[in-house]
Image (cartoon, rainbow, N blue to C red):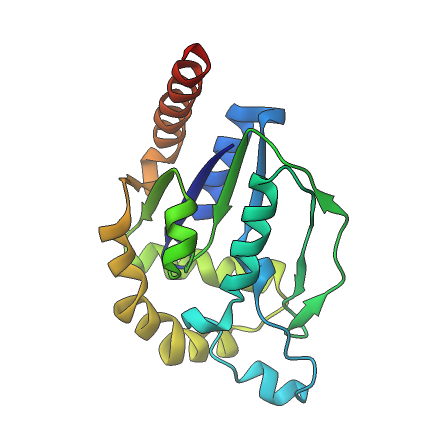
Length: 206
């Protein structure tokens, strides 16, 4: 199994890059989003859940992600985890994920835990101008997550931007490759696809 980790700022094009890779790899690959691994805060009132810092590294259950990846590496199925972004709590699992030759994991803090970083055979940083990234985030949160502009703006100023400057931009130092995603995500996906397929073919020959 070959694991590709993709990180970058919120709105930087991580998901688009991951989806382009999925189109190239087809049935060989499975995509896992770190967003599905937010910790469960269903015991808190909605107002307190909504006020949590969802851009901090410790908001995700990185240990659970590591355990799931190790299970896949052992050839075991894992739950297809899900998260309710409107109500800010973990949702019911959506079936299972089977082991695949290629696993792609993407999210803003995929490289936060050393053990998860070490499991990645290829570490990718998606890079995009911050002004474009925030516009993408606004569009996504309004269309897909049912949020209003005032709430998105407050969250960006309070948590998104500070967490990027403190943590996320430093993940670039952990990356094997950096992909500028504004105009090159398609080219980047093709390059990654070619590199991984060459690696897997060489491995099969040995």
